[in-house]
Length: 301
Figure (tube, helix red, strand yellow):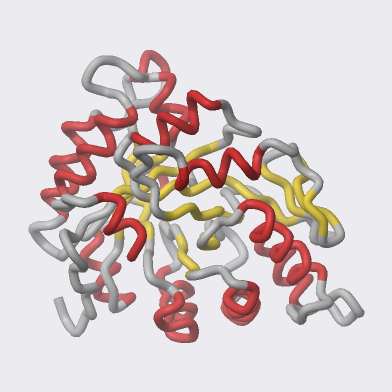
C-alpha cells in the first residue's frame, strides 16, 4: 500500500460514528437512544454558515453576532449525549455544509473579507460565532462536508482558528477531490485525526485503500443504512458488517460510520435498530470498549 501511515490501535481499537440529521431541539427518547446505542461518536448534521456569518442548524438560526440564539433546551440535550447514565458517546462533532449548499464558499469569503469583522482573529464574526457555538453546546470537533468550494487556504485558516477557540480536532467527510483533502491534511497535520470516507451514493465507487494511500492515514468508511421507499435501498446491519470486514482485508480499518439517523428510525425493525447498526460497525472494526476508543480518537446524495 505504498508509504501510507496507518493510525495505530489504541486500547481495543475500533469505533462507530453516526450522522444525526436533526433532531432539533431533540427529545429525551432520542437522546437516550443515541447515547446508549453503542455509537461512540455522534456527528450533528448539518451546520450552515450564511453570508453574514450567522450559523443555522439546518433551517434554524442558532448563533448570530457572537451570541447563541437557538432553542434554549438544545444545548443541554447535546451535552447529555455524553453525560447521561450508561452513555457510550465519548465525542460529539458538528458537521458544516452539505451537497448544494454554499457554506464553505461563505466561509472563504468571510476569511478573506477586509473589514473589521472579517478574517479569523478574535474580533471576526467567524471567531465569535464559532466560539459561542462551542461555549453553548460543548462540542468537541468540527467536521467539514465541503462538496463544492474546495479552497485549501481558507479551509486551513478556518481550522486553525477553530483550534485556537478550543475545538479538539478537525475532521472531514469526502467523497471526491482527493487532492484538495490531501493538501489540507499536509497543512493541518495531526489536527485532522479522522477522515470519514463516503462509500455510498456519490462516493459508492470509493475504495478506502486508495484513499489511505493518498492521504497517508487510515479512513473510516461510511455506508447508508436501509432507506427509501419501503426501506428497499441501503444496507442492513449484516451487510454493513460484511462490507467493512471486506474493506479491512485490503487496508487497515479502525472505524466506520453510518448515514443517517432519520432513516434508521424510519426503517427500524427487529434486527435493524440503531443499536444493531452500532454493533455491526463495532464488530467489524473489532471494538471492545466503545466509550474509551471513541474518546481517544452527511452527507448523502
